[in-house]
Length: 174
Image 1 (cartoon, rainbow, N blue to C red):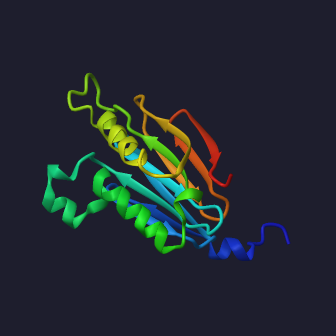
Image 2 (tube, one colour):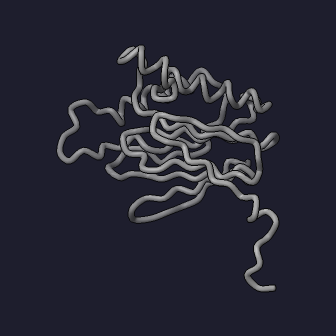
């Protein structure tokens, strides 16, 4: 029957990761998504063996900017959100050596000069943290002046990246 839904499509589920938030899953019917990464940075992670996957949508580089906010919403900051992401992935049996990462965002989307350089500072904080991790960064789309939207298919490890003028896919499965 043409157009009939498949069993998988009936159970498909999209989890939207908000600004300053994080989500992980190993359910192969789930797509993790985060929207409008401007100066924020999205860290997308996938373990191809266990299918443990996650997205962190961080806003700021350093939790010292607001200890109260960091306590209430640790995913908001690179230095507290990245450990939170990896610990959640480990809880789903991911292993550092198998985790593949895709990094997106860190743009300068403010019209004119950005005196705070939040996007650049966010990227530097992520890079600094990841230098101590035995993970593989298998792709990135960072900087510039455009927003990005990211979707991660947990079953395949496929990252779909959408920008105002284009879109592309990247695999985290290899």
